[in-house]
Image (cartoon, rainbow, N blue to C red; front, side):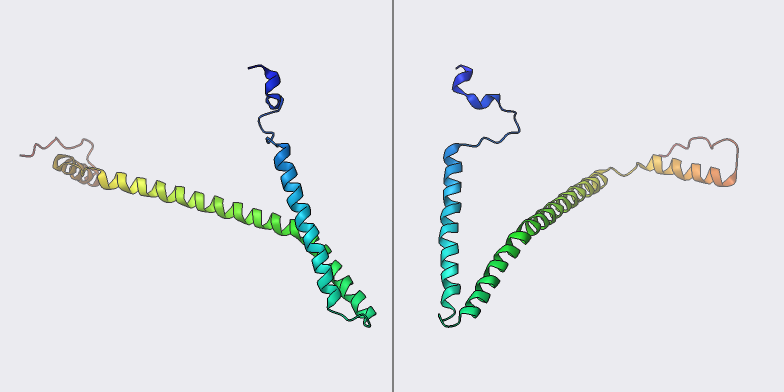
Amino acid sequence: MDKASFPHNDRPAHCPQVFPSNTLLALSLISLGTGFFKPNASTLVGRLYSPTEGSLRDSGFSIFYCAINVGAFFAPLVRTLTLTLTLTLTLTLTLTTCAQQHINTQNTRLARAQPPSRMVMMETVHRVRWMRTGRRRPPVQVALT
């Protein structure tokens, strides 16, 4: 196969593979949702007041549009905070799990360790006694039967 049949091979590896059909579908869903939401919300706000309450109706629309703008302002901040919190929690749980795994591995190794033989224990006891007495030469090896 030649390179002309795969034009996306010229892109760097970190570039996402964006297909026009998916992009058009996403944009159409966004515009469809926005197209249904905004006119319906405006109609609901408009029906809250009778035609004789013109100044109240204007105030209602002002509050409605102000709320939309405030929401649009805070949405990226909330998203960033949520993402940061999620990543921090994920990292904490991962490190905690790794630490527990390491501790359990160490405990398992210690539990499987063989106790020292009687000869090694007696030799250690003799060496400790020799160090306490202050003699220059260590005692002669004692053969246990």
